[in-house]
Image (cartoon, rainbow, N blue to C red; front, top):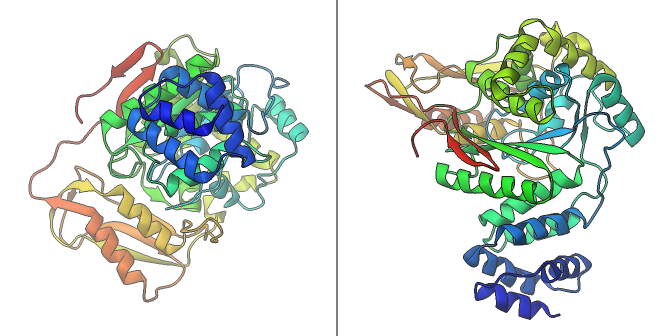
Length: 446
């Protein structure tokens, strides 16, 4: 078997066999197949696509290229949640304890962030004392005892995906839906989940800018999960404005605490209940999405979800008192209000630009080795559809100190807001649900 024959076959629209895909991934991982040939294959996939069988085979080949985590010692159905990423996305901080409080075990491996804010691990580490490194035995014992543990990705999960992703990044083939889907799902499968719930975001602050592309990606990932024996569902949600109000690590933890008290932003609460309800259904704790939502809302209202979060923090060495005293989280020493340049209604918010503003303040990483300042970030005051008067605050920057770059951050935040004279219609947050039965659209639109 030769790489050039696989490239030629895919270039001409042919379907590669399982043996051919395994040969490519194994050969590329070992260094026997050079970058230039794998680049040619990736470009052929970009233009010709892949069948469901090919994509599932590619996913398993990448998952099996490294460690395969065995979660079988954990009792119950282990349901993982993955988000394709968005600005202000702190759903794991809420869904983890919420779903665990309903009796479904959450054994999660999360990553650090590269971009506007830290990832889930960075946000948790903004809690004083919190440890994200647990050995396997402690991790499993904690999930069996408490129902919840979240740790940093350890070992060598899907190394073939890491290598292929780096190649795609420099060969303009990142946007290939089969390659995106197999990249995401290879890591989820290697992490040991029995079932997977996906939050696929679309809009200005998301990787998938259009709803049509988000639906294609969601369908591809659900098909992979189904092909390899994992119950999988996807929720498509809007990311044309930040989720909630807070953007920044400790700021997002504080907002997650408000949400677990039942007092969080409406959009954040809605999304967490939607994703969590699919998790408890797949985990066997509810028989329908409606029952799942009732169950989870009950856990928010009676304080069980918040109590679970406090126990989780303390189990991993963190200061549980932040639950009752969020002022003990890292706090920036200075704040600057960003004022509306004109009056009217907020017609649109460029979520990506607000994310970049938070990164400029130090809340995120421009490179993987950059340090994060847990305390800094921004909190928006006005969202799409809100009325605003000239000179009224639209956002508050939480900063370490005012310096020469602060003015450019203020300008970026102002530019992210589009204000018009007439009140706009507000796009629904939840757009569609994708399961193995197909796409169920919850709202009309692009």
